[in-house]
Image (cartoon, rainbow, N blue to C red; front, side):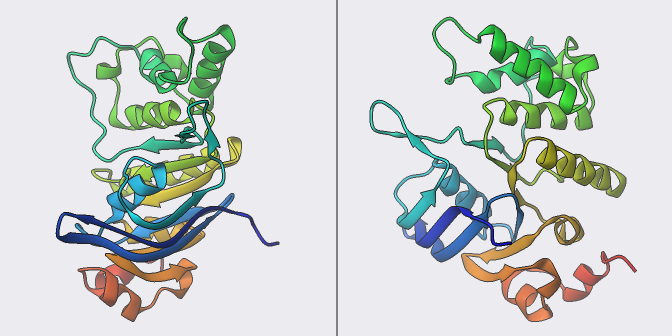
Length: 251
């Protein structure tokens, strides 16, 4: 069954001054799928993610996001996409509970009076769905790394997005933690009927969880199912040995 395309990029390019970061990017993200984006440091992965999110302007080409809608001033809302940025850190001096941190995802979406009763109920539902409702009154500074990750995803989902974008969520997690996170991500995707865009350096995680993979190093060198990824594709895209990739493959 053919799926609708929710994000479409046509001939997208971007430069920081004279430094060309992205060029001739043609990419589609199908509704209900997980797209994995891999590539070397400096290859443009985070920049591409931010362009899709609407956080960066000044690019060339065309970006179509079908879940966008115009606000009264004629601009576009992007809260149809939830975002968990790379290196999400919490200020240790910040006096907030887990509940407070998740509710902050509503900032800019609520009225002047703050969250409504229904919105607060939705925050509590999210906390339950991601498995951290029992610690909602704990300080955000006192929870484990895995619990914090779940809280940040809950915060990204509190605006009821159609697309969840994650930038290197697996950095610093051991293999056991990676597998637990991938299981959790699959459950969240199904529970909230999401499309997921996952930027990662973890080849093994990408191959077992992504429906599609895009290999990015300034331009797209490969965009297909992960099982079709070849030695040549990796050599063109990634600054690592093909043997290192296969060392992570299940026997």
